[in-house]
Length: 401
Ligand code: ARG
Image (cartoon, rainbow, N blue to C red; front, side, top):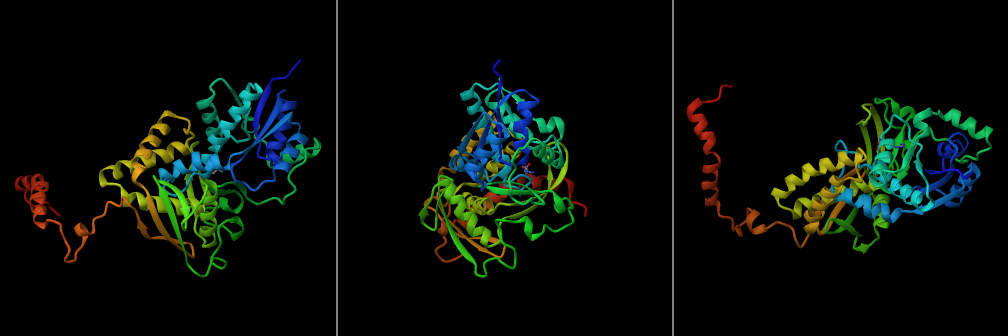
């Protein structure tokens, strides 16, 4: 009898290697392992070999760095997406992309289910599940880690007993999830909110003693709200993110320490390093302020907040995300130009911007003699603006201190 097929989101690490075997032995599936490359430094050949050795009947490697950059990171950038005002959503953005490729593989192989290795207390389970539901409501979703809560030690033991090869790399004291847009660092000593994250937690950003001694200027070019060049050189979306990340990281920019509100109600201490995201969002926000008018800018800020929350909660494949993104595309039509960033010792400042659409008229704003603003017009404007206040005060007298 042929077995049903399941498509597993396979990272190449210990946990998902063990899951390959569990899904085939205990759940009775033929397992198709799908590894989506979103910019983690992993050796593809090794990933394939490990999935096979763990018992996968097929392995799919999806090279998705440019897709991730263009279709997920850049829309998030247009929305200046920062959860709780600081977290650029690197992990949250990758899950719907992985879900999309799981669904594609499931259809291609005629699988009845998708599976992932997320636990029952994190956010990623929600994002994988909602991503799958939003694209393929007919697929079953299996999350063995959520059902069984397999500890790291138990996984190691299982791998040893079943002869499953695991990555040889030395065990990190942290739980890491990384992609082009950033690196999430959890666990170990970071679980004490009072303890400063040790230098060894960081891999992409330099600390005070090793950061570049000299400041670096970085000129980011945008077209319609999308970054297209660095210092005048045009780069693909993924290459651009990598370049900005490198320079910002060398200057120690992009470290984030957040007491985070998880979806399941838990407060957790999360540490991130996202040098590219932090620098690009600062640049984009600045150019948006320069090239859009106050009326639309205030609505955009509210929508930005919705966008970030929605991505955090796993609603990427939703009509609301599409609608807000459509608004952002229109709003960003004028967000074209260049922004100069100055990076030095963990500080990031916008120090200049140019644009053919800068809504800035020096003749209006100057205090110099070229002033063309009609000062007298302000008088009538203030008279009407203050009328309601004046009438109220006439009835109630002076407000009591
Ligand atoms: N707290 C972050 C988020 O929910 C990071 C999650 C990191 N994921 C992981 N599997 N380590 O987006």
